[in-house]
Length: 131
Image (cartoon, rainbow, N blue to C red; front, side):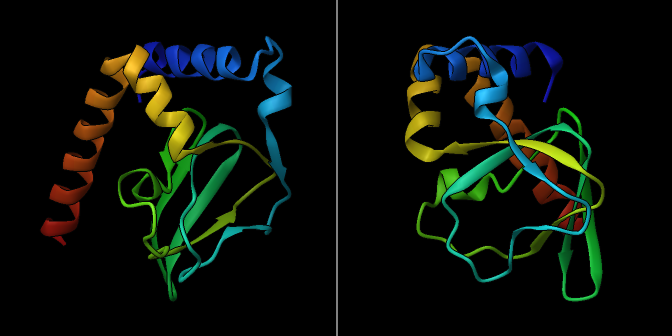
């Protein structure tokens, strides 16, 4: 996600929460802590603010999300879907969870965020097809 759209997303999250303090939005995960497990019901997408989160399927590393990256975004598109990977903090990490309803409110006001997310989906789908 571009830094500009990440800033827009952060601003909109603060507006929706009625809070200008980003720390109130952050979930902290210690190194090795699970963010979610394969098979869990997906309810949130996450933005990595600091740290790194590994996405794994069985013993295979699929990706590493770092500061500015998002993961778990399928929960926004298909709200009753099950997680298809494990997400584990590779190092101490600060994350912001975004629920589908909150995301829908944001994209009504800032549609370019949705357009960028669609581009991300397309890129990830093309990368998966190349494997």
